[in-house]
Length: 170
Image 1 (cartoon, rainbow, N blue to C red):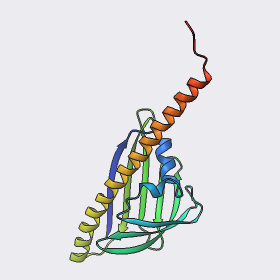
Image 2: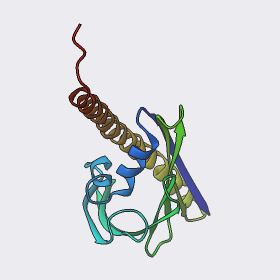
Image 3: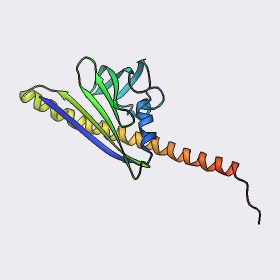
């Protein structure tokens, strides 16, 4: 039986900035993963977007589990996909522009196969609750990083403009 868990957030930063953070497995993505749940993210291959292969530890319900994932970009700049090797579970990061690309709607969706029956039902419930909690924290960290980056970029542009334009004396 297939399980799908989704969480979304509106982020006050450009779509380009948000996607760049998610696609950068060296200097972006690791910083939006809640440390309580994720550790030891290592890039085995690539590091930016499609072709990247990562491995990491995930800590849930008192257990640490190792994961390995391959990254693809079916729609570069909009859709980033992590496919867990070998289970085939898929986590998709969808980045949609809002307000002419100045703000962004980010959706994280995970699809995976689960057991049938009562154990499967209990597993689906626990997985849904846990992933939604994790994704809410991840989206919060992403928003903080992207919005901080957005403010810094605006300040840098303002500073550059101030330095290059002559001041009119009246």
